[in-house]
Image (cartoon, rainbow, N blue to C red; front, side, top):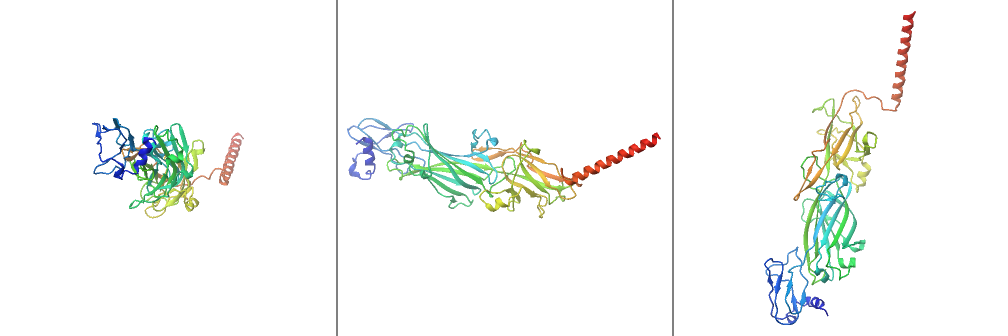
Length: 453
């Protein structure tokens, strides 16, 4: 039996005084409070354990493994290193804020449309620590908390990296709970967990190799903003669309993975979504001239298409926001009722308005596709939501100063529109024009003949 295996066997007997000598040898802490030293004078085995007086081990601490040494001077680290955890959200690389995001768009903040699927990443780092080898099993639990404006979709992957080796865990390598309301919370937030019951078992890493390099466990999952999402078009605004993480982990190698656990708090990440305010007017941009019944379509900007009009954005009316917004992907009724043409409103207090909420950053074209009778069609409006967002310590902020078209007053002037290109009206107009031209030519010829007669 080795000293290590003997100490592990003795670990479960430490509460029985008969197995240990009555005399304890105190260990003296060094000036830097990083290690303890002790000297013994008799040959034999000595058990070195963590001991707290008057307080329990902190949540973010971890016990050292019990140590058996023969007589001789020894220096012992008082505690094991502890895991850390980090959360990130992915933005489109075209929207990337270089100050706070990497080249793949991962960072502390992002912006997305309501209903648009995007990714979160949880990453736990277990430091290279010789104590890791002493665990019979090692549990890792991710605790994820989402604001009510975020809807979980699915786990994309769970990967474990050790040195140059990366393993993708099968579905049976972990367990996940469904999001449920946070107990005692009044803000509608939800929480769920992902547990790897025994990291050592599911990875199959050799016991001899473990403890020399750090281990990273990364969880990626998809989610989307729902109809509770906070939206803004105000420069410097914050947002309440947030998502946080913390980590529970085995922290006592002397009792196994089902024993004591430590807790490491993580960080919050934030997701912005934007709105544009639009009002339709008749003749003049002033109160009292609001015009209802005009139809508009919002297009994604695409300079390879005619008029730079890419795909039309499908929208629904949301009476809780007095605005149109994208349909959410997990609501079949919304997906069915979403339309590409929206209408300036006629209700009291909303007349002429057709605000659009829950948009991703980017460029759009707003085009009038149905003009009220007796008015000319207004020219297309190019909209650009240019957002730079980041965390100022723990508070998110967004800069929109280089954006355009966040608030639009669209004026239809009285008059008649020319018939649309290619229609029967155009043909008749051409025929009438040719007839007038030919008649004028005939009159001119007759006048010249009379003059020459």
